[in-house]
Image (cartoon, rainbow, N blue to C red):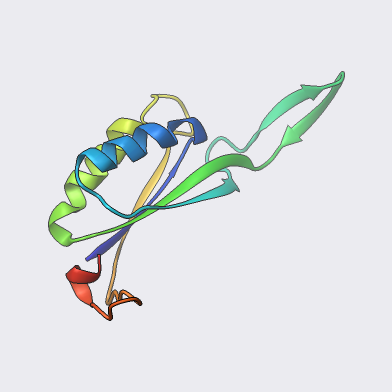
Length: 112
């Protein structure tokens, strides 16, 4: 079992959600986050004054999948979130030792 965490541009959320739904992923957690990578923020003009936006708005998506769906899930996220411009995001894959569904007590793959 793996936890796939993707940080993407906010306007790509619907595309990613749709791609994951089409491949059969049933559960997704979405958070609004802020951060920067190589972009290092940007400068904006507001009422004639210039100011620096250090942390850019992003969306963080977390998906728990069985090990056999990892590559397919990564491909779906990558394809849906890609714009070809700087700041498209990152995908992190981490191992999950245990998953427990609170309502039923199911564990492991059955809890996903």
